[in-house]
Figure 1 (cartoon, rainbow, N blue to C red):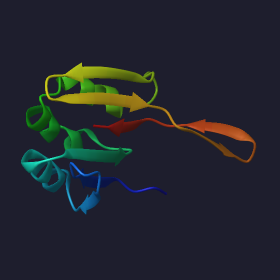
Figure 2: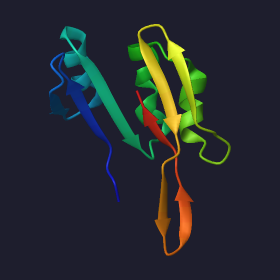
Figure 3: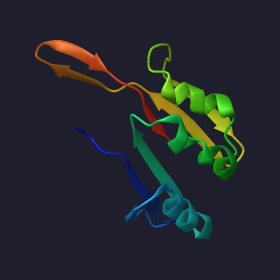
Length: 102
């Protein structure tokens, strides 16, 4: 099972692991970008991102409703919200799941 991971991407393209989303965002505020890779997040994990990233609260709803979401890209001031469904094959069956990429 994949675990959520968070990184700071420096302006030189170096990927620096971060322990929390807040740590990645703080480093990105100094320079570079934050990569927040949530796997099967719950709403409580994502709500702090509304203020931190200026996300619309419905973006958070999109991330926690796997049954009805389609892949999409939303541009917000200061960030881009990408929701996509990676595919994998398990025992000859295609499996799709939603991931949050910020």
